[in-house]
Amino acid sequence: MKKDNYIENIFIESINKMRTSEWSFPRHWDMVRKKAFLENSLMYATKNEYYEQCGVIRDYKKQFDEQEG
Image 1 (cartoon, one colour):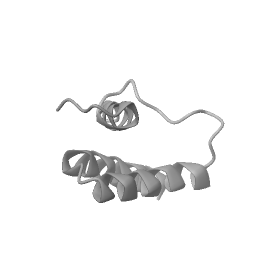
Image 2 (cartoon, rainbow, N blue to C red; image 1 turned 120 degrees about the vertical axis):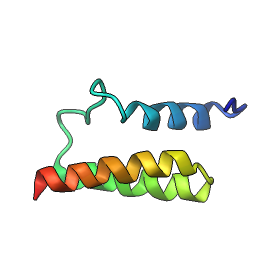
Image 3 (cartoon, rainbow, N blue to C red; image 1 turned 120 degrees about the horizontal axis):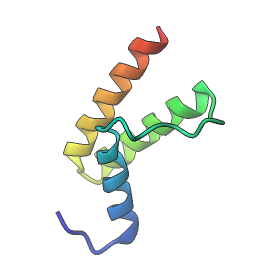
């Protein structure tokens, strides 16, 4: 899916990268900031109808919550 908007391209590519072991949060982020990032990303993806990315975020969030709990 090729988009003309640079921000949208970066968002989609970044979220898709969450599927790989290469992706991680910045080390200096605390738990609150990580959760906020996931929630805000999910809202943005939903609003813009990036349903594939919504699934990626939900899957990552589920794994993240399981590791934390």
